[in-house]
Image (cartoon, rainbow, N blue to C red; front, side):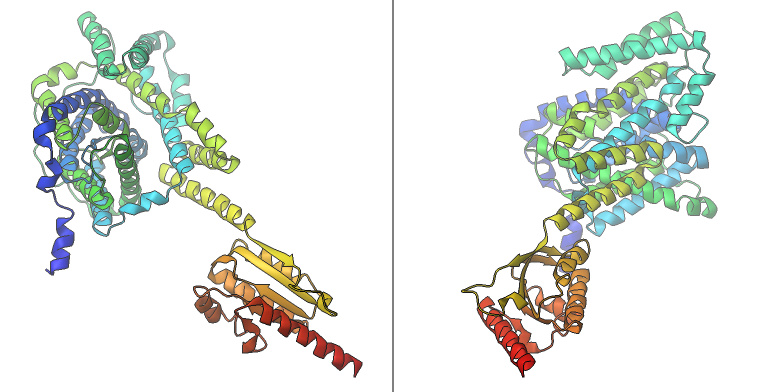
Length: 551
């Protein structure tokens, strides 16, 4: 292995620098880890149940993936585990392929994310526009809320349709309403406690308190509510799941979708964490490597794909986390719960977990965020709404693609409108024949979205003998724009108008030469660096034409 390759590999590995300052911050890291562990417990259970994989898989993922990502990831304060966005993607996959396919899916997706990190694709998330991210988040919130309707009504997990809206509607129609009042009451109590504590005691883990408050009377009174059920009191032994070639092939598409989501959500979460406090730089490529290893490890232990969790990461930072030890502590605390309190946790009602996720989902659909997006422009609001709608109605990853495409369309349209071809007066005193000369200043961008419109303005003049194109104010030229410029020169020359080009910028000249735009000029001398010689040449050309007509 070469020195450069070894150095590149070392950049992805844990070092002592990851724990710099731990001697000073270990107390705050310990407190933060315990706090975020308490917050993560009900969420890990709820996300496991909601995805259809089971509470055990959610808890295993939070422990194993949380520990691996904390050690190998690119953020000092990122907390990883099962997330709502991953639940949205996993639920239809579980319905189509069964629970047994999830461990294999986790291995495949983890490998894809790991390779993306090794190929240094971590910066790609910076190209996702803000309205797309917010629309994506809002859509996920709506889906998570709707996915909890069955548990909230006490009719089991999931629905009878792959679309969350249809499934929720079917569930409401099939519910036993007298019997559904009790689980609904549990949901309401959980929601009230979480909202009240969130408003008046924001530092108290509301979801954990709410779970405790409703679970104790349910257990003491032996109320007829579905509960999590038996949980193991130790982590399962690691092992490679059965890799059936037919199943692996059928999971290739879902694996790429899960990997894309894991990469996007993890990098966004790490980026948000970097803005919350000065806890060290975020290394995007190493973060992908860490998240890939985390999903691989979770799959070996029978868990589900993991991502960085924005809400838990924010709790971690606000609780005083400074190093990775906080996220490691969070994972170890959850492991302690498995070892020492599995029996207690198994008595938690599913409707209580549904209440936790419904409140979490409602907080993801922020009216204030939409107002901020709308104030930034009508196009941003459209991108937000399109992304949110496609997320709810169709597919999460497709929604991101369509959202990016919509944002790109509006960006290109705005860039096109900033471009223009402006007619100008010839410099100096007017001279006879100047009316036969057209001078245009082309500015902005000459690219595929603007080329035809700009060049139509120039080519529309059919009463001139010479056209001077000033390109010194042109900022951007792509292959389509260069080709269109060449075609316009050819069309004007065929109509008898001589074209002179002035002020081609050095960085644009090679493309214009390769596209044939320069070769389309009648003579190589028709390319000018300054305006005055170009105008003088145009006037001499008009004079020669006038003399030829008189003769």
